[in-house]
Image (tube, rainbow, N blue to C red; front, side, top):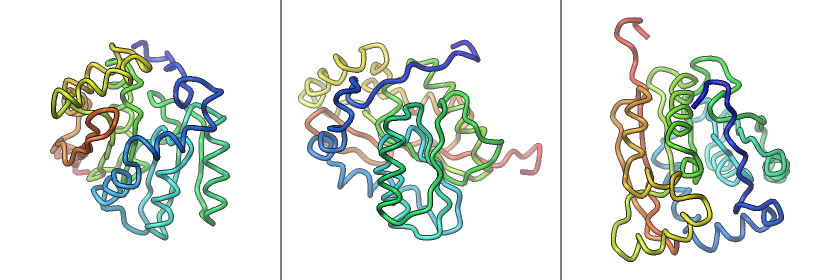
Length: 226
């Protein structure tokens, strides 16, 4: 991907008219009340940490983090102003103080080493392989040494049934973009971006296939002492 190319904005559920239905559809189809808390638990977020919800969408995950971990400094980023408005309203309604920025995942508008944790859910499968790598490299850049990236997204199908159930997602989001997910290729993307201790930590069977949680760590650079 060219360094200055901006990824295409993919509206929630693929069409802007369906954006208001996004939260209801996700809650009903992908075991949201199970996988999002599991993602937060895996990230082991502590009060006082700086946390970025990458491609935050309507802000469900960011709001859940702020509600569960009081004292966290929370930011959310998305390219779509329509979902950012929903996220901001959701956060205010929950009584949280959070920052929501409009921007692109391959050009994060943050200085190096800004965050202790980056979380992302149901985003990477929208990206081409080159966009996935550029996004992972940006996540690596803005994480502090010892920081962690935690991703929930579609993973390698755990059975033929799960593989068949994933076809509608591929029809909606594109076979090329989702190929790396269903083949189990996301960990290799994170390794190529510089992360270490990359692992798949948990999977969930859903009506649209296998959802996986991934963890990747930015180890300190021994050459710089950081």
